[in-house]
Image (cartoon, rainbow, N blue to C red; front, side, top):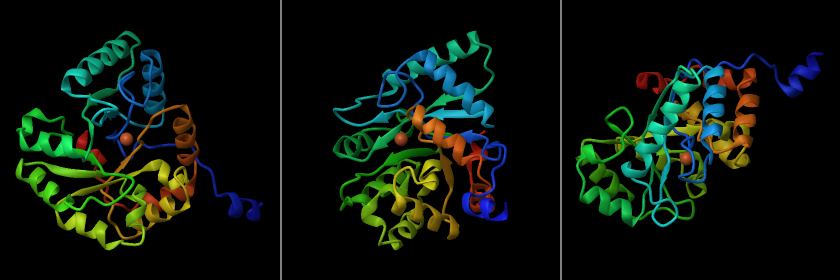
Length: 249
Ligand SMILES: [Fe+2]
């Protein structure tokens, strides 16, 4: 029995209530590559509540031609989901922000916006994702410009940018520049490959992780999250981190 547990890891009842709030997900239906139907959104939100969350901040992609979202597309979806949750008597707080891709459109948006025009998390944070292909040469300037608006960038899933895997100092640099780092829960389960998992674990071991997010897109993600949340190893790894999720409640 001992060998069995050692090999497969001890299992426990899933309980993500130590996080309180999720701040990265694609649960608003039909506006990006996440959930598509309103009923699905209600189901997923119920499931996440069962896992222990009491607040879910939904962050649809804002990505030029693919997902040209804005407050005008996102906030009405939030209202729809809230109405459906009230109808279904689901008592969980749902808010909306966005996951901004840092590209030329974002640079222009930042140049022409005030803090109030942007979809922020907790008022002072903005969730941003970077190119998956190559490091942006002007990233430090963009971060500086975001900071000048009075916002603190949260770098979405830094462990997923493979070009930084052998340049760990870049993650430290993001912190020096005033960014927060948000690791995906599913990176810890190997959903994005072994190098991503290794980097996520290293970020935890170096006490560099500020937020954990589900980055929930679809059914497979939900199933994997439940599996991860039933492993004692997961709680052992993240238990001592100074996570800020609860500050968003
Ligand atoms: Fe995302």
